[in-house]
Length: 406
Image (cartoon, helix red, strand yellow):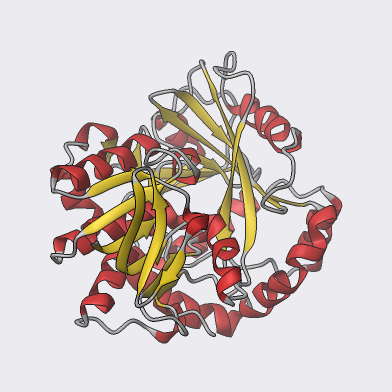
């Protein structure tokens, strides 16, 4: 019998397993696939210490209507899935009011700002420094009005949270990124962020570190989770695995797992697509803010990432988002040929309150939760893992906003 089972070997689950292990807890990490091969694999690879405010729901009627009709470059709604996420989206809209968003950002920012300090020792111990760049990324703007708005936002974030950035004119941007094919209004260079050339590879390196320190990484089916007296049990490859504690860190699959235990988790999903190309792109990861796409240099090629698609977890993939992203990115760079024949897609697990769910479950002893990180699971995995481990050990009191309401 082990002390704790962690279900999910993405960045959040692996970060949690490492944090518990560091506190002397005997941990078994369980997933149906090898570490880092699900949602954590497919992101932009940016550890975003500047992202102190979570993405709010748009408040302008025009933006909402364009997303609903499929005309919004940044967000697209799949109307056929409306019945599944209408109520969580309504709660998201309410939580995004200016006053509520400020309260949420006060909690969110404390986690984001410590993310680098939580990743740094893991990167060093895992020998993964070759995957990391520490010179930031750029939000670029095609239009003068949106660029001026972005400059004001950057100045506000520096005043409120101490976030450091560099404002670059169109001429300065062209000098820093000579492969750009058209003139742009300018950029905000977020200098504190780090980028990773292989997000799935970084998670796998962290998992190897966990295993080298004595942790067990096994293939298993999380849906077999059940209570066994005062313990928790799942079916492993060599028979049942039991533990006093179990952590659900399954990202978008967490809500489905918890439903039979009586928890109605109001999760919704922002799907993203990516595809690699063989051409030449930016020196640093780049967000085309006016088109809602990301272009990031990776070991596998030039990774092109789409805006968000609000849809059901099990809905079929569509080509709309990646086609749009390819057209927009092709205006900026010579993308070349695609490396893969089809785009990858994954689902970001989002909560209406824009904060992850972290800590003990309200009605089951020994059941712990760490999911719902939205866009920032790759950034926040080690941080929320440390927070959860601290609460489990009894030496950290988490903000009540992070706990799941029964």
